[in-house]
Structures are given as C-alpha cells and as structure tokens.
Image 1 (tube, rainbow, N blue to C red):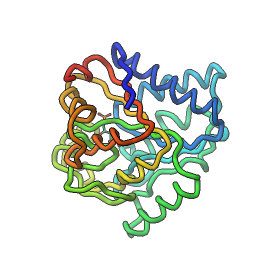
Image 2 (cartoon, protein in one colour):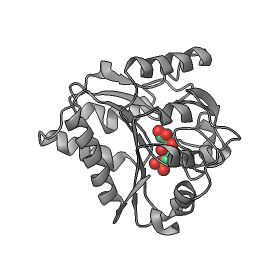
Image 3 (cartoon, rainbow, N blue to C red):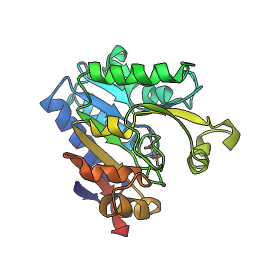
Length: 241
Ligand code: F6R
C-alpha cells in the first residue's frame, strides 16, 4: 500500500482527482470503479473542474459503481444512481450508456449479482477502483464478517451502517435494509485501487486497515494484499497511526 498524506479534506480531494485524471489521460477508455457517500463528493467536484478546464475527457470512459441499495428506484434521490448522476455524470461528457450501477429494482437478487459480475468482466475489469471507508472498516457494502465475499452479492446492512446512512433519509426506518455490492473479490480484481479517507472519526479504523491484521472483520484490511493500492487520507484520518 502506498499512503499519501493530505492536509485536509480539500487537499485529499485534489490529490485523488489528480490520480484519477492521470489514469484517464494514460488510458482514455479506462474503466473507473466509482463510489458514493460523502468522501468522494470533493473528488468528483475536482474532476468536474478538470473537465470544465478541458483537461480530461469522459467520452470513452466506462464506469462501474460499487453498490446500490436494494429496492430504491433510480429516480429516488437516495439511490446511488441518482447520486452519481447529480454529483458527476450530468456535469461531464460521459455517455450514460457507459455507466453501470447494480439495478436495485431487480427482484431476483441472484440474477442481478451474476449479471453485474458479467458486466464488469465484459468491460475487461476495472482499471481504477475508487473506495471510501466505512467506520466499521467496510468497503462497498462489505460489512465485517467471518469471510471475504468473492463476488457481487446482496447483503443485509448492519445496524451501524443504517444508523450512519440515516442522515440522508427522513428516518432510520426509511433506510433500505439490503444492498447490492461488489464483493471483496470483485474489488481485489481491480487493477488498481484508490482508498480515500477523511476525518478523525475514521482514524482508529484506518490504522487497523493499514497496520492491523488482514481480517474479514476489517474488510478494507484486505487491501494490504492488493498489488497496486493507494491510500489518500487527510492528517486527521491518519492520526491513529
Ligand atoms: C459507497 C460505499 C461505502 C462508503 C462508506 C463511507 O458507495 O461503498 O462503502 O464509501 O460507507 O461513506 P462516507 O464517505 O459517507 O463516509
């Protein structure tokens, strides 16, 4: 793992956007694995700025998002489809036909998981996977468990994740109880991964991810075994090391 220290959230966002922009420049038809949540919003803002300045081009870029809530239609403002559209896609010249997100409305969860793995495979795999870090060490919606999930799967969200995400809903009751997520295996098959982390509230978890034992109880710790993993974190998030 290569670890880059940023002063604060904004610097983390700029550094992360520079890494993604470099990937896009070196390989204009890159497959980018994307994440939602609060952490990447600044990174997407920086990418939009680079696009507006003519520095990067999304016309041949393909994307595959990590996860999606089960049971939320695309047009629901809490769906990850909606998030991606609002925070990145609608601001850049990406072809929406080249964007991929698990379909939260597919009732047959096994079929949807198999379909999504096939989509990623047919794209030739993910070149650069952007990741945020959950307070419990999750990546995507891969919660602490007794094993690492190999493939895209449908998970029951942990109480702590529902609690953390309820800020986006009217109440905890409205947070979906299940989600589709790339598996840890899916994430590990990405050619490179970029984990971005901000804030003192994640310091203890990030220390375990970087320096603790590799265990499915801290799902992101598996990234220690990834041959090309980069962490960009701010000083507050690195304060536990
Ligand atoms: C989002 C995702 C999640 C988040 C994580 C951190 O697509 O996969 O794993 O990255 O929950 O969320 P924030 O950035 O809101 O702290």
